[in-house]
Length: 476
Image: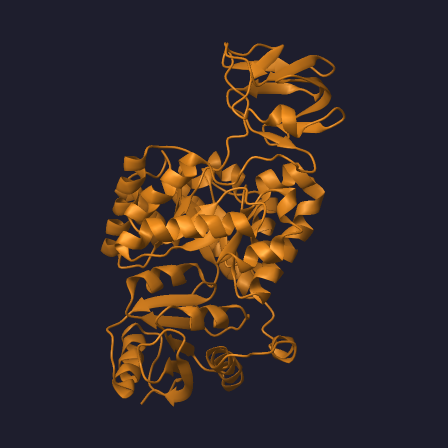
């Protein structure tokens, strides 16, 4: 069985090299994340083109994800680069300050903070490692008392406990970065800090306009990082193609103890709504410095797989870590082992769902048939990849192969759980297409004489959303 759970890896100083990228792809990376918080537009374009060239050399479809920076809710810079905050000491966050910071006060990249907070609010800095209590707001200055101290260095992030910061999800930089991402037809755009469906709709519109010259429309991923996004989750999912469970900033806002249950809820809701789910942040954090993960990290990755996530994501582990390739190898091995324990009962899936579309009904029929007949594979001949996506929302120990003649659909399917995308020539005649599909899987060693498989397609061929046929075949 091929690995069902996909791996997203972030490029950075440790992996921004064709040789390392090749090793990452061979180790199991399916999607490469480009972090737009760092680097210039030309850097991202060069990296995107480099990944595509390496993927072609390896002979493996790989998607590119542009991860937008979002609003810079950060402190300014310090004269010494960092200070040590002591519990009980006063500390001022000053939006009007132009000079470098000291142990008494620092400037703000986020100028709206004084209007977003009031006395009694709790501010968390540097991913919650430092805690400040707001005492007063005077003009542009937020006066606080240090509750939990420690080292604070340049440009560390600020969160408000419980949420409530008004920063818009899309900044002017993000809008320009979307144009850059469309210049090399990025497959996925991840939007940071969306609060509602409107943020995602605006991002999609900007991406579609920027991609119009290339006839390209990317898939949109909402990064769930704000507490305000939780009650809006269903609406955000409807406006997106998927979500990222971005556990870092989310944990700072809602509290660490709340995140595991939220993760399960988000993944379950995404699957029920036929959307993609990515689980991210600190999955293999110790492997930034160590050659093996901790037992807790192994459990974390395995539990995300058991939750039904489409993909698990690596950030600093592959961007700046000492063992980027080894980290991917370990993650792939953990995912494979966890998948063996996944329950494949389809009873509840079928009894509790209603299908109003022919193509969705065909997709579900293929799963049910393949499961009960013990088919070796399910083949979806697909234009857009939608049929394969619907199939992938249900756990079944039968690999799904999405066969398409469109490069964009092939790359998009790399993120779908239990879907192996394959590029094949376009055929207008159904019987030729069905035979070609069987030949492709026989040639790859997936099928052999005597094996049964289920195959879906649309007739007439070549129309998105036109899947209307299910056939069960035996290899002669």
